[in-house]
Image (cartoon, rainbow, N blue to C red; front, side):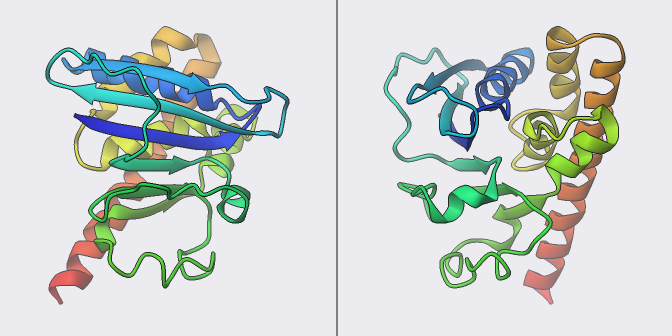
Length: 196
């Protein structure tokens, strides 16, 4: 089973992102579940949502305490909430930012992690460019499709079509594709550096 925890703020589409991730996993032939962790539901408040994927039926219902991947939609949460709690050392970290892990003050923390598992993508900027609103959830799904091969970009595109229509769907698909390409390039560079 692969477990994902998504951290963001109210109004950033955290819960929608988890739902769309589970739809993409389902479209790719996996069992999936997505659910939010409800705290205060006001705009700007920290929000957490979860997604599980597996080749067989999922019976677990509790929150994810030891995620295989963490998606951080808002980097300001890094110093407010313990977003990395329980993350496995071979886990993935995907952050919506234009800065490096070192620039965010995470250089020491991520030392034991595999470089190709540490990924950043300017998801808010991509959403603004393609959709006209800085909502990072859909570009981050495109980026997630590039890591680990758990879901395909095609499945993400189909999930977008199920959730949105017209120009919004078209813009989200373009944002997801660009985020996917950015992460694929980062992973290739990380592997080159590792083997250099």
